[in-house]
Amino acid sequence: MKKKNLKFKKYLKSKKGFSLLELVCAIMIMAIAVSATATGLNISNQSITKNSLMDKASAKAQMYCDVIMTYVEKTPSNDPYDGWDSLTEAQKNANKLFADTPNQTYTFTSDIQSNIDTDVKALDNTFSAKQYASADIDNRDFNKNEVAYTIQKEGSYINSDGISMVSYKVTVYIDYGTNGTTSCTGIITKSKYVQ
Image 1: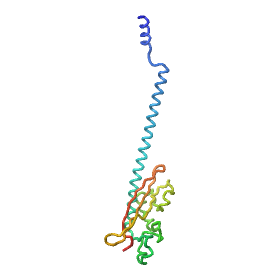
Image 2: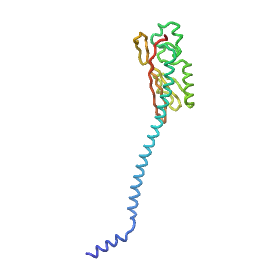
Image 3: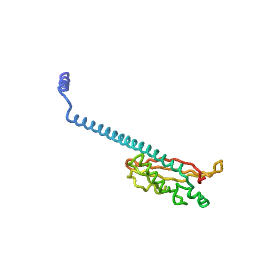
Image 4: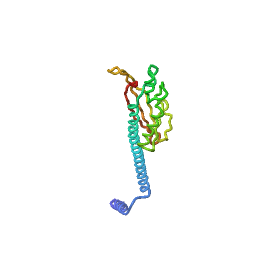
């Protein structure tokens, strides 16, 4: 019996390297591991790229939202829908913000829209600005470098001094990547009518 055992040990000692089957199995296992790692890294890279684009777009949306909110805050206006008929001609003529009064869509005058577009282009010449009605915002062309914005009446009240106040909500939309959109919303409260 001892001689057989020695022959088997001698056979194992003489065998060098891997058999073809062992080598093929090892290569297949390594290929599967590399493939899984590469897929995970690709997904991670896409996520990082998308988040980076979203962060840049969010910063731009905030910047453009500030520009538009400044116009809403500083430009004399009357609420173009609520109480328009009770205003004097002087009050109606003092309105410089909203067009086509009375209206319920809160569309800016063409001068204000043009000024906003000019300011947006001054910040980033690759963008243009366009106002949308809230109902139409999802129907715009997502492939443009466009600052899309809406304005809506958020609410109104009478303050402690007896002045009618109104809050307007400005929302700015910036598209990034493939069908990615980020937005920024701001609220401005001001006198409902020119004083």
